[in-house]
Length: 520
Image 1 (cartoon, rainbow, N blue to C red):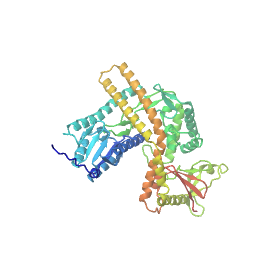
Image 2 (image 1 turned 135 degrees about the vertical axis):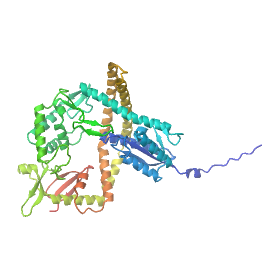
Image 3 (image 1 turned 180 degrees about the vertical axis):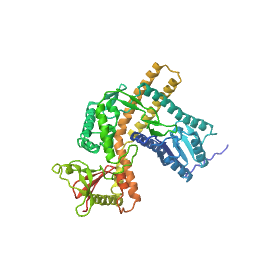
Image 4 (image 1 turned 60 degrees about the horizontal axis):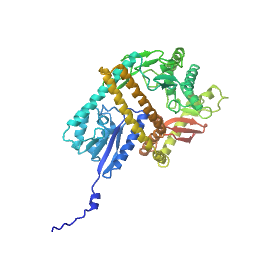
């Protein structure tokens, strides 16, 4: 009889086997707040997915914001990941799909070949392709080619459909401006918001500046369209939007053959649809405001189609009086020697309405340098705990739901584009096309509304976290500041609040306000 002896395996040796170093790559095509929340959802998904596999070691997640998939050379996250592969830090990569990785066949194959040469393989979730198990590049070549042609085809089909709607005046405004909402495919006036729009136009026509109007609305506690604070830029956007007259100017922007977005300065046809919806502002008031804005722009040396402000200063519009809420204006004082000072605009107009006195430009700059140095030295006690607190807030459930909604919206849009393609080729009757298209649009609006609600619920803390992280990175790698720099101020400060001639507060973009004494 044969004798069989069991040789027990050494589990310790198994546990000593090195884990596969795995990274993930994800991308969103725009840099909007909603897309950045979608990106955060992808981050949460991949980190959880990789860490749940005991045989994998989570290396990190590489991502790009606001970058088109058709261009490899401008995607810093992707290039950084490839560099780490070259350094031997990564052995396996997971990504959602070929179209998210690259929509250009040549670039896709070039990167895959390069990574395989480094011993690094990629798993494309949507197509269920693992480059480590492929016998040839044929399937990948076909799929990446389809991704590239799909990108072009979708773009062309979408352009065709949009152009037709431009021409017949049926183009639907997917994101109505403040004061309107979509209802049954029509732009309907929101009465309370319409009153605010009328107030904005009336105030500017009475002589008030856009920053002053924004400050007044903020003081009254009236939220902007996204629920945040009003700014001069938001006010100017309302004042220059022709939709408030009931008309719509279509194709203000366009996309070229290389997927670049441009403002339309006459390169493409525009379509003016008159009486498209109910007006809030008369054409006469709209044109009068246009004259006022153009005149002020000339006085300040601001040219249209030119983002450079020739006579602007870093503190302009950012110093707020704590007593009356007005902004401070720049003045030259010449008692003794000349120096630059900032004065409350209401105090200048009527000293009895606000008692806040001027503060010196140099004193503000000195206080800013002092405040930044405190952050540099005390970042471990101020910024790091703040960042950890924001990160520990549990948004995982929201991120997962947003990811589910993203997938449903993507599927909905694919069906819609397929319908458009069939219609363009004459395979569908207009009546059936319109019925199916309306059904898909109704479903998409519902999905977008839920996504928008979730996005707004987490967007505030997410934006703050990004700003805190950015400021922390600066404070960590920077030594003592010895002089004021405009760029640093503009990068990290939202506004300055003047409490007195002896004390001001710097409201940082990350959401905290730090007070500093003014040394006279």
